Image (tube, rainbow, N blue to C red; front, side, top):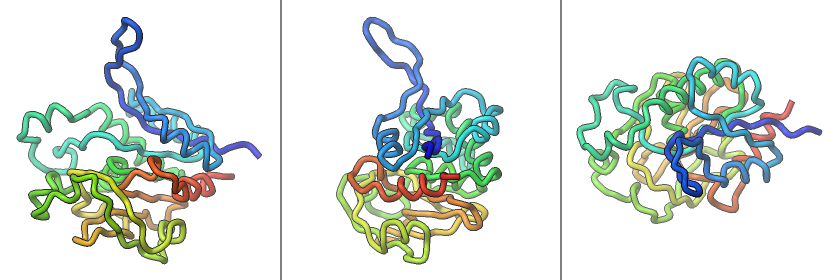
Length: 231
């Protein structure tokens, strides 16, 4: 049986090798390794042209919306970033491409696993919004810390069926889901009720998680994606 082809979104940034510094498409190998371990064949998708999103999706069996920098707040109806450092970190070219890619995947019913920033992309693509600066909204900085914490998962959800009703994660993040996008349902929560997992109702497999399952030994979320992506 051939392996399902799983696309993985990537950075487009300057990189150095040898004496050269060039713009390069970058993807942490942990994503590709997790897809391979789960039985899929990983393909890195460069964030070049939003108008090619539907063409990419037609060639893929599944999609990983990978982690990365914060999304431009103007894309979900908020004022531009006021902090200079926050504004400098934004990657509007990647935002535009991944929003188009997410919408195309949802429209085509292609299985999607959205991780960290990827979950935010999926939510915004579906018309949702984000909490832009989480510490100010919740009154503490635990979500920005590397401290492991336990989250609760709905056992009736696809995510719950894959990993159970509780899981300990460590995933620093400054943004979080505020208003859920169309068709999305919250299925996992931190102890302060910040959404840590979402699912797209009526979709073959549309799961978003706030943490980074590719960084640990537990590969069950990727296994669920690859299983859904098989013909």
